[in-house]
Image (tube, rainbow, N blue to C red):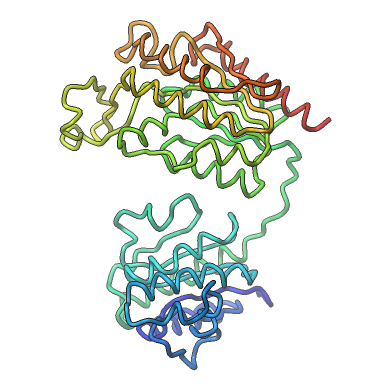
Length: 404
């Protein structure tokens, strides 16, 4: 029995009442305290909801009048804001929502507000398409509804029963407090910097808990999210390649405040120029026409890498320097003079000493260096063992200073 633990069941009772009631009953039959949160936007709350839409709407910063309007799109967006604020006033053991495209867009942002590790699920008609806008950097689990959510039938009841069992199972799982007392360190990695990051993580493992993030746009933002939530006590940001995709329109772009989010936290930061020699695009037929004369490397059938130019590298270096200037806490940026990726070493297709030097010089000239904010050149390739050890040692030294 789950006892008093609370599982929220979220959806629009004006269009999905049968499914929500069924889902609540399935969860309750498994011993959980399930409560329906109505997020209908028609202005009328269902008597079968445990928390009515009118109550949720009062949590909008501008009150319920901002939610209940004649424009459906505006109403859905406003109810989503209200739900985001409401869900932070409760402490559920888990939460599950159901919805079509509109309901998924409404509910997903609120589920992402729940802390990492709190079970969160969403049965959705759009769960098999591009799910990035809904999941983003969270641990939200999507269940494809297979059929439209338009009434109970032999298919929908199977899906909802499975979803109920899954969320109850997640809620029941024992999450004992971690006995690992090592400080957690976030590291960023790409395939072309794997050798460096793996060695650095090994160097840190005795005294720290290294947590590696794939620098695919979402990975960098996930690392920053967790740092903001207090999960990380230091960052070894060796692979800042997502900045290239944001500049060039690639498919793995950094968030708008990449690196600067970390600057505000005051935790030790060691960064580097990993994979700043490349931007990521899809298959060759999806590369923008404006880049037809550029140097490419076909990583796999779905990913094509484009070498960044001297001008692009200079612009990225200026951006990094400006971000470093926002650090008041300890921050060091390490420059690997002999290459920034496996494709940028001597004899490899992306080797371009001029572009690399433009990047390095821009970082150095833009950064206002202080005793705690430094840029260091190392006569090494990023994947050299000595570079990985040097990066790990820089962070270890910072962590020691912070804890003593």
